[in-house]
Length: 189
Image (cartoon, rainbow, N blue to C red; front, side, top):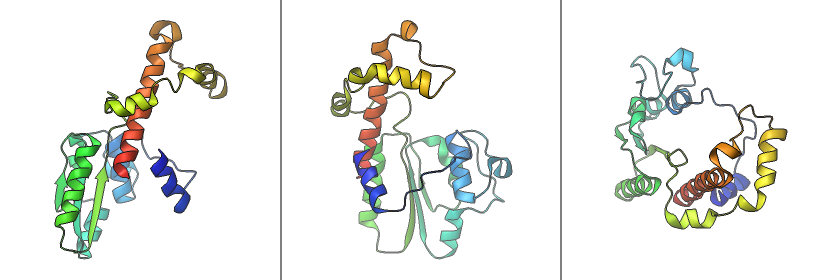
């Protein structure tokens, strides 16, 4: 993620952060409300934030800002509370970014709060071929280091089974995941 890394070098980087939940919708509900999932009651993807809960988007709207959201997954529509425009169709990062930029070009300089959510670094890892080609064999050179890291350093209880899945399959999945990150990084840039 070279572009995101460059932003981190120039801005404020929080090195110790904890998500309130491992699922997308509950985590975003916590970001938008400053509440724990037990409090806002969004406990899984696809759930809707209750109408009684005040959100960051509503705060901006109340302050006179236009509120717009572009999300790459439809199941986040439950987070639309407070957004005048919530565009949440399942699509790739390039399409979400294009829609966001299109809105920015049409904006008449009114103050706004825009949320952009990209979902590409999730399964099924299907980045454009040029990104996959860039990442090909990246882990092949360091495969022993990678497997040792998982097993010894991280002491992971479930390390991908080399015999069951095959090293090539595991390495291909890791490369494809990295390709999704690189693709998303390019789109953010």
